[in-house]
View (cartoon, rainbow, N blue to C red):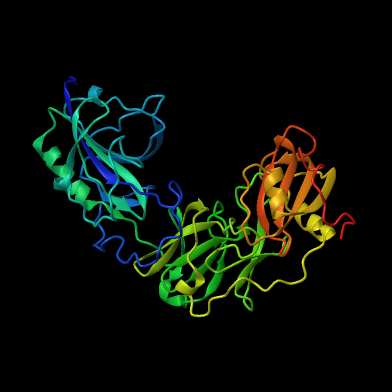
Length: 434
């Protein structure tokens, strides 16, 4: 077969991974209505791809699932050809200009080419090849890009065809692209990177339900339905902290709060930290509604300011009433359960004023709310190992703790010395230990 010049056409099935890649300031609102316009499923013969799409493959064409990384930017998921399947090189790349001149190949990747933005909204099916826009092709050819988004995830559909490709095969691309459909969403269980937990109508406003995902890689979460927002809080607090292990949380229906029993910390139903410094809201996953079903997934996200309870619930809760403030020994006992220092070789705590904590700067650049007037400075010595890893990252961990509630304000770890610098020079308002 003679090789000739190749014309390349690119179609981008879109992009926009929410929460996971670019962390939103708060969980997504649930009124996402028709994320994808419902449309009939394709007729046979149908290729059911592992990428989550069904496609009608023209007679005489071939299709295969792929798993090939491209330039650290894209991952090839599926490939459809009017002949034998092209093979990728060691770097996952296919030299499209080397294809026979009569070849037509369609590939699906999960990232668009540099410079091509993702679709601004969820796309409707069937897809329209005719709305593709001109775009550069990495192999030097002229291409077109169709930006499409499905369930906040992006894909790129790229069509490559040679200069001698038949008119029938070229025309088949439009029908092939139009045949692509997302695979049906089950009423429950795993759906790609999402967990389907049931119909939205089965969750009353104000309800809190814990789920253990069917996918082994997924984290358990509490689904909370607010008036305007669905929250999917991960069932462990203090995610991604170097000095602190995650703490399992439980929901307290009487108090309408989440609690970490190790520290006594409390969080609202929207995930806001109610005790301590207010900086450590609950980590969450994205929750959306599609075809009346609630889907949770997209990776774990933290940060941002959760909505106020009054914006979501008719029975909002405030800051829990202060109980008896914890003693020095109680503070050490609480935080010894969640420090990443192990084994603990030495532990100590000192009570200081807010002004002293800020002036001495034992934890550099720490923010302490003005209404917190007393701070426990809690130190632990020993090997610091982050959760899930065995490597030693340092020899001490240090915490600022709200003296009134025992809630975490901020933390630090991993210095090379065996004890936090400056700790021993701090004054102590409770030298006796209580």
